[in-house]
Length: 200
Image (cartoon, rainbow, N blue to C red):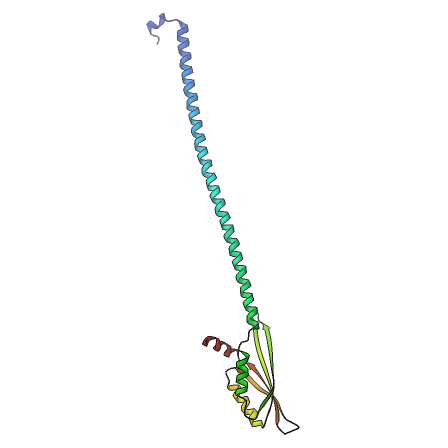
């Protein structure tokens, strides 16, 4: 409803006033849009900054994980090489020191008996689980006065903790002084090896 006193104002003034209102509303609308755009941009920048930081952190952790995996693989290889080297060394180590075996064979030898030769044979057999089973055999060649001395020697060797499966290969008379030549075959006891290692 038009106020009665508004009639004395010129029409151009009313038009100018309406235009001012439109301009004011337009400016306010532009300001609101600008503020909303700036706010959205700030939020977007914060999100992008957070994503960038997370990406850098993930990249850092990934590099550290790759380094740890590389070190783990390296240590595993070194451990495997060490185990293989230890197994190779173990195959060449004497289960029982040769000096102990020699001492045992000579101490059990009856009086007036002589050992002419001692032969050692080592056999290695690979099992299904790639373990190597090592067996050592000894052959004794010697001369004794009588067969009873040979029998006593075989019995003494059989009772020793270092030998097993002791057997006489042959015993024959010598041509010169009627003594008895003999050959004894036996196996080095693996149980004695473990017993010696446990006792140390």
